[in-house]
Length: 590
Image (cartoon, rainbow, N blue to C red; front, side, top):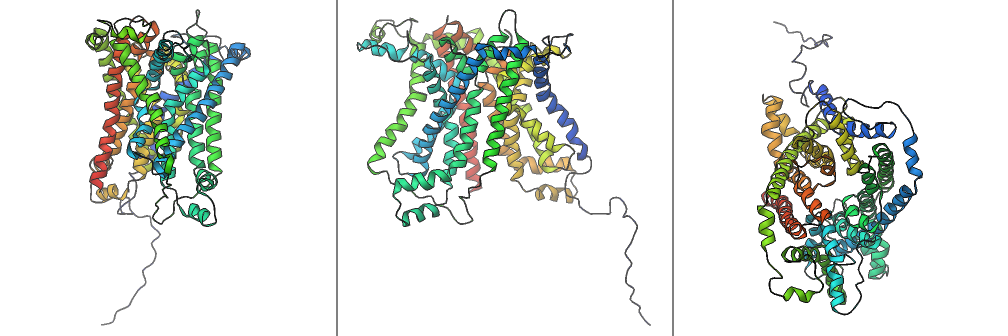
């Protein structure tokens, strides 16, 4: 019996469907199109409001139900030659530049002493760098209005008690700059602390070996190595302050100082409303923010600083010597100005029976102090309703935002879907649109749309989801990028449908990131003021709006201060939860 070996011929026939590959990476062919409806949904939330702003800027009519003006004109941009606009633009730039530099100095100092030195109470100083983030900036501004008002401010009252003239005027450019710097310094602290903690000490050791003194090494090596973090945080803070509306409205407007966001708000609330001109100014405001954002990317893209290698990294610890105590005192001064003094000011305003106080000695009079304002504030129908609205809107907005962010992040980073790049770009667009501009766009959008959501809580939920889309997307996307997809694919290989694999493998793996994103969006929704300012009605008032209205009207300062303190307590709890979850994650992972 003979055997002939025959070389098998290469088959030219297409393999049968389903037998080409026993396993195919990726969720499947259907996901090629799943990005399109998702892009349409996110685009509708973000691009339609922005489109109404552009349309109104070039139209003779403000978008209204049943009347969208298509008579294009550029006359609205004549408002840019108005002296008020030029003055507001100059003030915005001046405040943003000065406050950014101040915030960088504060945040950089705290980051350096906690990451690279042997400062006393290092853990507490680290918390000092973070704690101002727990206090919404506009609540801090309201508190500083109580402390630093040139007439009845508590600080000036104290100086008058000592026989001196009150030196503080918070309703001035230096006052606005100080408050902005206090509450945006944590952004610089976080970014610089991370960079300095991971810095490779080899270059610093080399500088020391060649005779460089400690401070010369810091100036010539350490700070240049931290330059990307300094530039990145500086440009981010500049954009955030440039588009800030709440602090400027509380502190700058009473002093007759207009900024571009407050100027847009003033045009919208003029009688008759100058919505088209407001839209024209808003377009310029967006263009400025986009230009700065692009400059940020361009500057950082040109630089490459390698400070972390594959070797273990242990940054050098600089001994402060006699400067340990002064450094701690400087950190405590920031803690007092950003947290202690504002909260004490709110507390004193809440427990004082008389809204007027000529001197601190009057506080010792019988009946000068009581705490009934807290009971009055938290048991009032307005508080209960506003608190209920805030909690309901924040929960639903955080839930909707988390689900949408997860879907967008999954499609962008786990599929080959069509237009996934466009989906990522559109998801990040709200970061470049000031909240005051997006608020106007959302107002016009939901006034025009034949969907009866304006005047309900749903319009607030939709607005919050749109505004916070970048934060939700980045929180989920970074977790998806750091999670190996082979685990999910293994489940599919073993026969599980893709959706089942996502539900029982991917989601449990991302549960910490998803829950942290949910809590982050919940906190941001609770503290959001600018967007609901354009969308709320008397039936849909939230806590942030209630506090703002109470302070603006000035008729119930005690209750407003008490409500603000309760609000801060709620914010602190919401801010604390993600840290606890993070700690549990670290413990489990250890």
